[in-house]
Structure formats: structure tokens, C-alpha cells
Length: 429
Ligand code: PLP
Image (tube, rainbow, N blue to C red):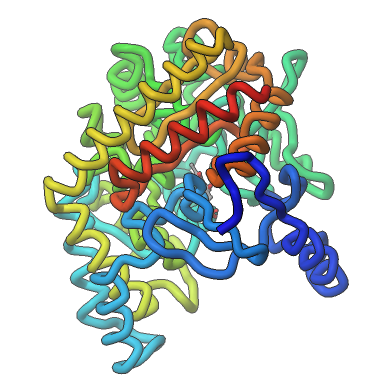
């Protein structure tokens, strides 16, 4: 291992291989979220628990965790065993399997809103299923979403995920996005009940979709009473309430944010932590809505419920059902959050650490926790990127947008090493 304590890890081999792969892969990557990372997108070789090993031979403590899924770390033995056993039995049947029914049963047992579930392969697809169900159930067109919330990369929902301060209407997230889709979208500030109530009173909204704790940008709790108020307003106006739990599901509690905060939506979408890295997503919710899929609402997908991915799902959910799993995440995550806040305080750098022990966010330049996107966007991004770049040279990989994901493999020794690196990195920015 090279000398991470001096902050001298180099990433030249990653840089070289990204340049080489760019001859074949557009931009050298397969997701735009991997573009433009400082000092270079990494080329990873293998993972082990809390660690990733890259093409330069660096061992990195990983807080990306695959953008959230790897809640049991990179190489959990129980998931591997289940997957290997299923591989020997078959991969994809184009039909139902017992392992898929078992995965569905576990989700229904763990998640409050889940009377029925269907599997998808990505969170973006699960969100599309919710859109279609809500419009079919209500006969209405308009979808309410919130500034700063991300619900996948498809045309009809990739709106105002990081809008500028002077935005006057829905802001598309991509070139080439069909702008007509924005007609059916109403974008509102989150955590503001009066604004939502007023919009719902118009009576044309099919569904309200939100990250019930805003975790794509920031890790922001709903204000006290906000979710309860949203729930009541949706019920009163016959609007379908959807919690997008792609990040929070099976991560902030075994039953997601709805279980942790005690507010039950009509539908919820899941992905990421549900299968510890396998491409599994789900939509779950009220039986009467979900059964519309057996009654004229189309939902398809060749890979939905793929048997190996279902074996991973069952093994992952069984671990997450064990109270010891979340007890450890809570204790260690809390210590890490407090340690990071203390490091910034000691260095005299204004920063706030917010969120949950399992997924939290560090915002440099904010004196108070942000309550919505308009407040969060004032964080000092260039300085934060300088921080994550310094951290990487000290052997810790954390997302440039400020999020930190935790796994069960981040034990006390890993957290000590992380806080050591954080202390050094804050001195360098
Ligand atoms: N919804 C939320 C809240 C997400 O965080 C994401 C992905 O980051 C998605 C939807 C889209 O999921 P996927 O990337 O699996 O399509």
C-alpha cells in the first residue's frame, strides 16, 4: 500500500484506463453520474467489505457503496452463498419462481404500505410504474414533484433536480428531453405544506411523488408535521401519494423512511439496498392500486424477478430484518457524523452534517441544516469537491455531492481511519 497518511495516493492508472476506454465507451463511463469526478473517474478492480481496490493498487475506504446499494458491504458471504446456489439452478426463467415469491413476501412483511409488490430492474422503471398506476387510478394527468428531488432519468420525470435560483418553471435535466412532458409536471418547493395544499385544491393532480427524506441532494428530514400534512391533503383530494424510497428503502430502517417516520404512502418505489448491488427495484403499495396491473395497466420487463437477483434480495432482506444489523449501523454512523462535524468545527470551517446514520450529508458553508433545495444549493460545492479530492488522496472515497453511505462492514477501526483522513483533509482545504 502506498502512503495514504501523507495524502500521496495517485490515480494515474485510472486516468490512463478511462482515456483508453473512451475509444469504445462514450465519455469513458456508462452513467453520467460517473463523469467529471475529481481527480478522475476511478477504475475499480475489486471490493472487500468496506474497501475498494482500484487500478492503481490503492485500497480505499468506500462511502459511495455503489451509489447506495451495498449496505452489507462489497462481499457479504451470505449473499454470495445464496447467489452461487441459485446460479447453479438457473438464471432467468421467463416465468415465476419460489424465490421471487419469497422476496415479495419479505417486502410485504417489512414495508408498511406494501400490500402487494412488483419487481423491476431499476429505480427509474419502478417510478414509471407508479406514474402509470396513479394516472390510471385517478384519470388525472398532473404529477407534482419537488425541487431537488430525483426520480430517475426518464423524460417525464427528469425535471428540476438541481434547478437554478431564478427558475420560473420546470427545468429539464437533459438535452434532447421532450419538453412537452413538462406540461404535466408541477414542481413545488419541498417542506412547504401551504404551497402543496393550494396546488392540490385545483383537483387535477394524479400523484405527488417525493423523497420523504430528501437524500439525492442533501439528506434533509421533513419538517415536523409535514409528511402527516401531505398525507392528509392527498387523501382529502383523492391524490395518490408516492414515496420514492430508492435511497431510503431498507436503508434508514428495515421498513424504509415510512416505517422510521410513521407515515404510510399509497405507493412506494424501492431499489438500491433491497438487493445489495444486484439490479433489483420494486413498486409496492395498496392492493387496489397494485391490482390494476392485473387489470389493464401494462407493466413488463424481461429481467423482472430474475432468479439470481431474487436470491440476492432474499439474502439481503433477511440480514436487514435482524435488529442487530441496524443497531450497529446507527451506533457507528452516529459516531462518524459527530466526528466529521467535530473535525470541521476544530478547523473553523462552517459545515453542517445532517441526515441519518446510514445515509448522511455534509454541506460546507451552511450554518444551519438546509430545509429544501433552495437552501441546500447555497453550499460551497467547489470547496466540498476540494475536500473529497483531498480525502481520496488519504484513502477515503466519498461522493462529491456530499452524501455518505454506510455499510455494516464499516466497523470502529474503519471509522477511526476515516476520521483520521477527514482530519487531515480539512487541514488541506
Ligand atoms: N429515485 C431515487 C430517489 C434515486 O436516488 C434514484 C437513483 O439514484 C432513482 C430513483 C433512479 O434509480 P435507478 O438509478 O436505479 O434507475
